[in-house]
Image (cartoon, rainbow over all chains, first blue to last red; front, side, top):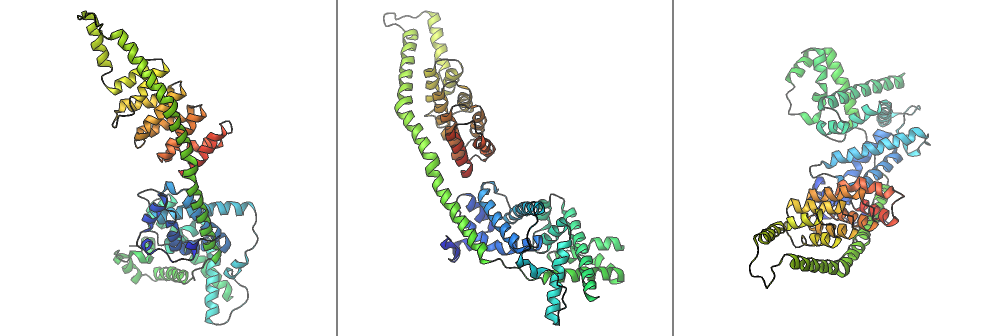
Length: 200
Length: 273
């Protein structure tokens, strides 16, 4: 049964609390506070995971697992923690589990993902060209090394400071920046190559 | 600045979040270097294309599944305190109130009687010899503080009732010394009587906020064999919210050789932690 909280408006009092304060409340037993955190972060987290995994259904499963682990391991959340960094730490773990399972057993194609793949058929008009570019970018992203894709997405889309990205990746800030830049150059090369192939 | 140095700084220059940083040197190089201009333009174009990617929206099922999961967890969390802590605590309280406390009181009275018959001055003899006076003074000194009494009872006397009496003597102390707490932890870990170990644990309850006490109870848990004391110790650590206990509780929950009630208590404790 779906909770009434799923359809009710968020408690206005919660909107004034920071992510960190809400997570501390969850840790202390106020589990409803996780609803507000879900509403705030499910969209960006899902967007990150769709680009990272290239699969919509897998991204939804991982988001669900991330919030499940937040509940399960809520007591490990530290007083001096950063909620966003912790969330992406859990997301990386869940994504690693997903990749391990999907490597072990070939998965069926997800129909929801087909729109993201490059299409061989020609498109007409600017809108179609733009859609093609998006498809090419998704393809280029999927061809990046997984670690490169991850650091690029974290730095570009999730607005995480490089200090937090470095903590997540267990490397120095300088190394995180170098990896992000290298990933961007890889993406550029692949993207332009795909554009050339389309033109020819 | 050469091309390599300039291109190493492109990441910062392209990062919109670092608008305040001074990139004058890089910009000056860019203005004069067509190769770097092409490189920079290509990277900027790629980023711009990335930024135009539409944000994917999750299906309604994600929100539905999340709130279903949250409700399930809330129900489980609401059931736990009622199931896990109260019965064992109530059993121990009843055990203490009706069996251990009268037994301990009797032991205390018996000890007082024996000490009185041995050391108290006989009424018919107003004068004491110097040896007896010295012995009495020594005894008074030894039982002068509760801490010494506990140490004396736990470490030197062998009677169960006397050790129990030593533990009892600490119950009314609001601020016992580290020595008293150490002795209580020693009794919990080493005393051969389960009753003494249980009473030591009860005496430690008011001081569960101290790291020394929690660590002592946790360290004693693996060597404990009595299921009643094991469950009591698990309840103690869970009530104290000692997260360091989680790995040990996990091992106990999986240990098939332990009593079923102990494994269940460990499992519930893990969920609460």
